[in-house]
Amino acid sequence: MEAEALEEYLHRQIPLSKAMGIGVVSVDTDAVVLHVPLAPNINHRETVFGGSATAAAMLCAWALVHTRLRDANVEAKVVIRRHTMVFDAPMADDFTVRSALTRPADWEGFVRQLARKRMARVAVTAVLDCGRGNAATFEGEFVALKKPAKNE
Image (tube, rainbow, N blue to C red; front, side, top):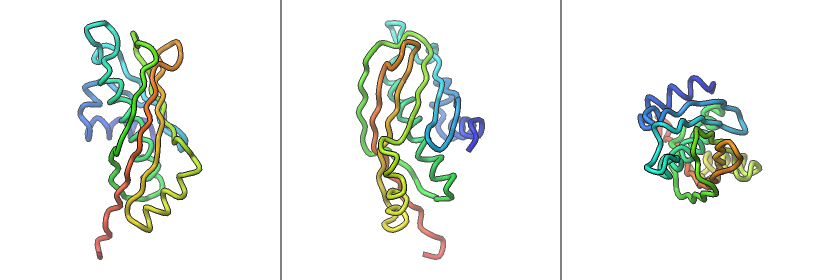
């Protein structure tokens, strides 16, 4: 999936992404990168609101799993199971979020399990960068639920 197509999809299907001003910088097999402006996500301390940072990280991580499955022609619903977010520095400017599989070698087993059991889990990490390096890290576990075939 191309960056522009993913951004249009996110803005249409997840309206919060449009309200937050999220833009898709790049999409490839190994990573999704989003750009998030400060202005619509600012808090009373003139830094990024923690909820916005968490939402952007979760969206970026979800988008990686979604696009990889779509590119593999696997129809499945992808939902978050659990996550943690660690903030290392305040973010007082626009920021980027880059998601990648926590353990890339797990992908093939994830796809096989999804085909066999119709449900599988995969871990994704997202790193938020705000000018001076890593400002926060998101760790999430996503569940893919395979849609039943029409003849089942």
